[in-house]
Length: 470
Image (cartoon, rainbow, N blue to C red):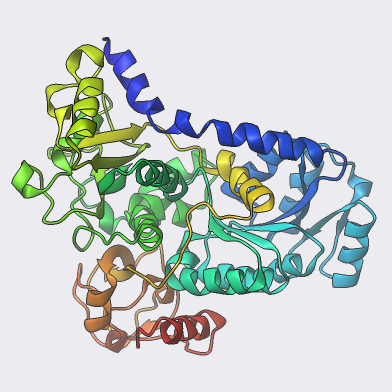
C-alpha cells in the first residue's frame, strides 16, 4: 500500500468511528432550526472569531452575544456574519443587553462578565487570560449555562473546581473539541471503550532549540502574518501552550506526564508505537499510562516536513489479549499500510490534524444535546503547569506570564509540584520576584510575591480544600 494510503489508514482508524455522533447531533439541531440555541463567546481574537464564523454556517446554534476588550471587534463579529447593524446593540448595561436578547437582537460588549448574566444556553470562554477565564466560567456556571473552555490557561489552575460546580448546577463544563486536548479525549474515549490499554497519549509539537527562552520579538513577524498578538503567538513558540494543553489532558485522563516537561523526542508518526513504549519494549517510557509529546524538529534543529506528527494528536495502545494483538498486527502489517515496527506490542493511532476553532461548536452541541462534556474532569489534579525562569531573574522583576519575557511553563506531576511548593503557572502572569532565580529553574511560592486577593487565587484555595491537596 502506498504511503498516502498508509497515512489515510492511520488518520481514519479513530476519527471515522466517531462519525455517527455528528449525524445524531445534526438531527437534534434540525429540531432547533426554528428556535436556535443561544451562544455567547468571550474573547473575539483569532480563535473566538473562528468559532463565531463557524457557528454562522450551522443549523440549530446562533451566536447572540460577543464580548471583547475591543467592543468594535465584537460588533464586527456580527456585522461580518450577516447581522444588520441595527440588529446589534453595543452596550455594557445588563438591562439593555437582556432586552436585546429577548427581542431577537444581538449584543456586543466590552464587559466579559456581562455575558454570563444573559439568557443564553452556552458560553464559550476564549480569552486565554487565566484571571478572566476563571471569573467568566464561574459566573457562567452560577447562571446555569453550559460552559465551553477554550481558555486552557485557566482550566489547568481551577478546572476540577469548575467541573464540580457545574455538576452541582446541572450544567456542563468542558474543554473544547478541535483543540488538541479535545481531539485526544475523543481518541482516548474510543480506545478505552474498545478495551485497549493506553500506553501514552499525546500531540505533535514544533520546538526548536532555545525556543523555551523565546521572547515576543523573535516571532513577531510571523505573529503579524497570522493576525495574532505577538505575546500570545510566542506562548505557542516557547512551549508553554503545548505543555499546558498536556496538563489538561493529564487531568482529564488521569495520566501523569512521563516526567517534568515530558520527553518530547523527535518522532515520525509511523514510529509512535515504537518510541512511546516501555523501556523493556525498546521505548523511552519508565511506566505506562502517561502523556508525552512528539517533536517535529530533529536533533540537528531541522524541521522535518515529511511524516511529521505536528499538528496531529495520537494515542499509543496495547492489549493483553492474544486475539486482539493478532488482529491489530494483521491490520498494521506492511501489506496493509503499516510498518514492521507497528506489529506490536504497541500501536500508534494517529490523527494528522486538529481543527482548533472550527470544531469547538461540537462541544457546544454535545453539551446542549447530550448534556455531557468533551472529556470530563472527575476528580482533582494529576498534573500541574509550573513556572520556569526564561532567564536569570532578580528581586523586583515583574512576572508577565505565557509568551512573555520572564517565564515558560512545564508540566509536572502534581505530587512533585506540591512537595516542592512550585508556583502554578496561572499565578505567574503578574506579581514580582523577591529572591534570585536562575534561568531554567522552576519558581517556588517562596521566590515570588503574588496577589492573593484575586478570584483565581481564592478559587484555587477552594479547589485544594475540596480535593484535600493542602
